[in-house]
Image: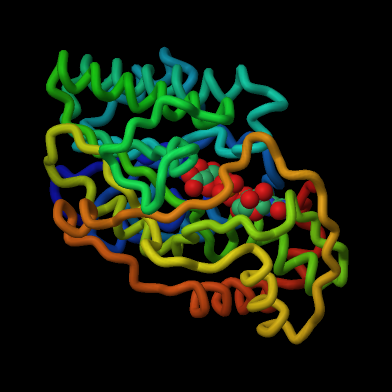
Length: 328
Ligand code: UGA
């Protein structure tokens, strides 16, 4: 254990945070994880991830919510955290249209609560999860200096607001902040509302795949362990910087991704084309030079290996995955 290296990790039962926790613990940090265990997607996945984390020495868990300021205050007063990694969020781009208020209260007000606690209890370092969806309408590859003032989803708007709060709290109170813009993160035990989890499960179960639009949209899919590595590297002092954490290569269109999954599973997909979704960006690709320069970070796992590993995890856990709800 690294002495005096106690990290508060929010959203600890979430997909990216669970991998981040594993990496932090392997690196010798002590991790206090919090999560409200909400049911935006099947809670069994969150419990599955948490069970694995609880088995690792140095990890402790408290079920609570970043929206509850008094509870957070108590947590900060009782623990001397060296840094906070805020990965708790409402994260569905399209789903954010259904209940925008909860996105605002978690992603923006929750971040504000954390910043206020950090100010009060003098915690110096924050890593905040932000999103590639802020780049809607910009030319690719997306780089951090582009003006991102035209979000097309409530989710992106709330993440932009959280970024702005970070800027102000850095200016006023000198909190050191790394704002990481993640690009469509995927991996084993991923989010069942996202494309790759769903497509693998639906193709294997021979169910129709719902595709928003014609399937020519593309994402700079980023492997979750690469992302966790980026998060850990971003704990270093930087001032206040926005950094893309993306694959940085063309991963191909959704139709190409589906074809790769078909090949891995040896099954044919049944495609059900739906209208384009208004909150979706058409394509994403990260310029990752800043991550290389500031963090020495580069993604290691490419899409072919990544998809293979996801399918492998799915097949090994197929009986258990059968009952995991994917939504539509
Ligand atoms: C993902 C995450 O869900 C966000 O939390 C994150 O902030 C964002 O990446 C990011 O990069 O910042 P998204 O890119 O929409 O959002 O990821 P997916 O849900 O995997 O969707 C990728 C594409 O597949 C989209 O065009 C979507 O419309 C499409 N899709 C997804 C379908 O056609 N069908 C589905 O069932 C699911």
